[in-house]
Image (cartoon, rainbow, N blue to C red):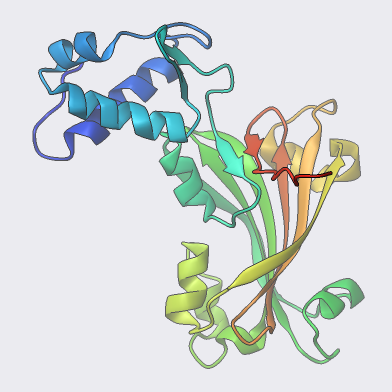
Length: 253
């Protein structure tokens, strides 16, 4: 059995070991896992350390704690994407306990079509950088993203040759903030459900079959001056990622 080393946060190490066990099938969805006392003894750490690991895993909906009964692997253990937040996909995947990576499918400077021009409030003679990426968790494709960035956002800070270099726009939000001096403050998003037949360009790189529903997020990102600085379409296969959303109850309704 794995035992934590003592050179980084013990709670993080315990969490990683437990998440790895769940991913490897040692603890199955719905199955009870060892108690705090049992894990503290196994890993030779305090109960408080195990409790901190459990808290992080509970927040990520990997485990469920039932008072007076025990701790169980969530039936929905895996990648959780809070729809009310915009999070870098690499960060989202890593925080869920997976190894994150991405592949750039295509990129380049383009003369945008009418739809992209309207989304980004551009004139016809203004160019846009287009980039398509596939993000993976432990080597499995989980997100296909299609982004359009107006040339004016980066042209005084990066050349066209520099921005097309692999990885130049990742981490995505840091790219805007640190390289472009143009932080994205919010997105206006439309969310819809589609099928691979509606989006044939993603079927092959995402390795999905024709019966897999896809959550599609069509959104425009704005900076602090309410200028549109990014138009994105994200495709998230329903069998690869779970989605969470806080819905408030209005009293009297």
